[in-house]
Length: 187
Image (cartoon, rainbow, N blue to C red; front, top):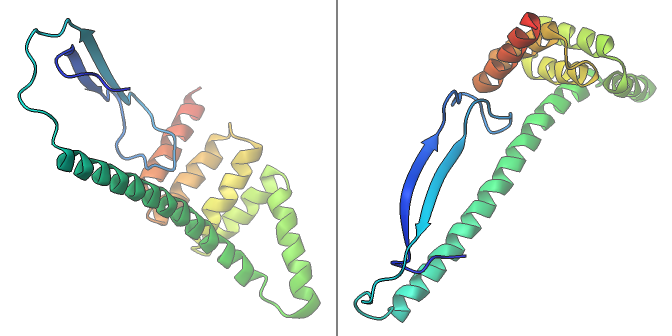
């Protein structure tokens, strides 16, 4: 829906970001305020009209620009999904490297790894701790996330996840995990 020119007034427009942490990335849920406040007042249109009629060439240019912007937004969203897949693939590549022994032992180790993904929080946390000790930060973070899926109220797991993410260079996500750990520890 669009508003006809000279039929409204913008009475209030404010970007409300009170308490918002700009360090949190797009992969995590935002904290604090993230609102745009807008108050529009309808008014009676004046008796006069704006000068001149709409330029058809200008309208065609604006339509083409809008289509290009829509295409760019779509490409940006696809790229964001691909970046997430590549991060997850990097973690999986580490897991496949561990299971890299030949023959039946390889298949048996891989099945064991799959069982760990589906096992309880303590087993996933143990695998994450071993990955942390080896300096495999992304892999540790992935297993800490699996452990948190089983027990999301464990502040120690949130703290360890934050440390792993920080070591992997993912600072906004690490900050979120540390804040969550502190909130759970104080509760």
